[in-house]
Picture 1 (tube, rainbow, N blue to C red):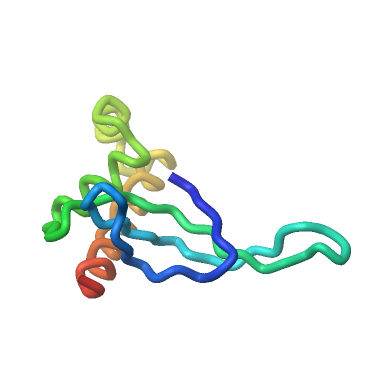
Picture 2 (picture 1 turned 90 degrees about the horizontal axis):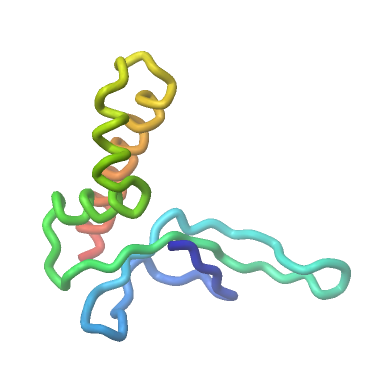
Length: 105
């Protein structure tokens, strides 16, 4: 999911339902126009159990973008297909995000 905020948020916050909200891809953006311009931070987030494993975080990140059928279709492509290469790069990024998140926990 995508969200926006007027202040930069930490990468990990408690969610209302007892889960943890992991915020990632946090980046500043300028919104508004003219004299009404202001800086905000946009980010993606997932929700995880309070003590997630690396595999759980990676799986949730992947499912936020691809459902199982989409992932199977991508895995059927050749490893030089641009869609497969993008998928593989995304998986690598998910692993890095999981490592970053678990470092925060």
